Length: 404
Image (cartoon, rainbow, N blue to C red; front, top):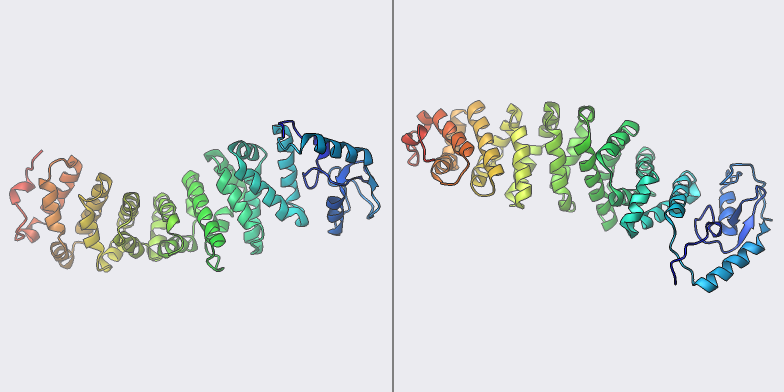
């Protein structure tokens, strides 16, 4: 097989495959017989797919014998070469996208686009240039609006393979304001948790992360309680653990808005984040959990939920000086917020009981820690030194000076 390109007039405008039985219709356009018959059998497709001119409903098409002989001769001599030029491929993709509007051809066209996207990076670039991202977004939104999942798997996979950039995200959101609701709907599909459904949900999570990351503030203002309930539910899921990091990124990005923090807290986020961290996840997950918890603990409700969890304070305490500088800083900031704004007698005694005071004293004495970390620990200890003065680990001299 050589690398010669397939002559474009050998390709059926409907199936986009080499024609087996070419026939010419009344408008002078040649199609594969099977394809044009299926087109007309839909009942409402009484126009020529290429010219949009009316076509008589008939099975008596004119065979194009000359073209058929040329195709057969070429196939025999060339052993079916399949390489196509970028121009030809783009024409094929554009026709596939157009066929998405034809019910009988929609699924097959989606499958063809999915196959092209999975073949090579060159194909993925070409698909983006042809407008496949917007086309797939339209399919996903259409599935959401009609509550039909036919074609959803293929559309999500194409988007997963092709991806999109920041400027494309903003263009998508400006024309498809329901894409976030649509992807949230995918995450709530209650079909059997088979591999296909799980894959669709993981792809939806990844797409949400990209869209939210590049979105403007107006998008954050539109997020609702159902969105955050869905995010929190994923933290509980045993089937979507591979999507937890993406969900945490979504939560961290959106919790910059206080109203979103409130909805997360009301959705049970604090409890689930603590539970997730108690499972000793990887470092990157821990850093994200602590970052989100910090934002949630900036509110009284968030701090109350943390204190309501029997292991909340203890978990924060144990992670300090155990994972990374980021975790140290976030953990100390959470403890600072709790002790400053929610520091009841019970809370301060609880900090002594679970080892928080001991850990703060240790931070002051460990060499190599960042100066901010040690200063924050000193600040917390100094604030409540009158309550914790009897703690055996507390050296009052360290509250005014500490090793550099």
